[in-house]
Image (cartoon, rainbow, N blue to C red; front, side):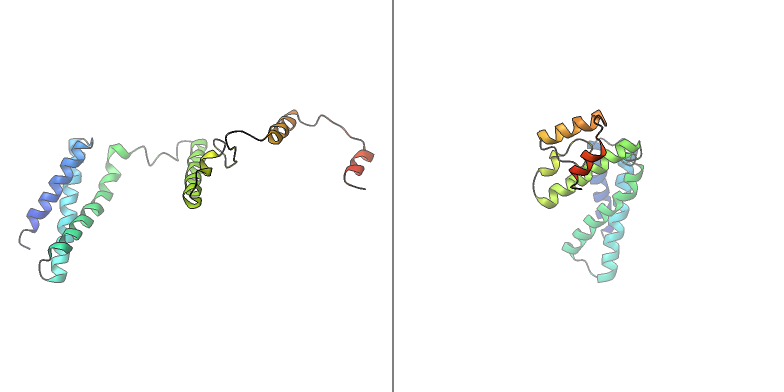
Length: 161
């Protein structure tokens, strides 16, 4: 276990400094550093205990994995990320818009094209920049409501009776 504490301390210090530069307040940056030191120390110590000897390449991977895994609990208390968990809980409309945006992004990535970005805002209907004249006319007629009253004979003629 020689040098394990030093390696973990270096990793934690680098993490704390990076978070501080990234905009974290000093307490949060320190929390990242302590969590990183603990996570990478445990990961490297576990690897050394399992293998019984020091292997530089594997320990580097264990250090990196421990550093990333240690971020999870600290992100939960980081004030910079407090609004992300509430993004879909603010109102039903914003939740729907968030879901539509996510689905459009998924469609764009799966279909490997930019078609998904051409949906009408807040819907899954394609507008393609300009609506078709038929759809504009249909929307106009739908907005007018029932304006024509047909006699039964005309209605029967339309359906072929």
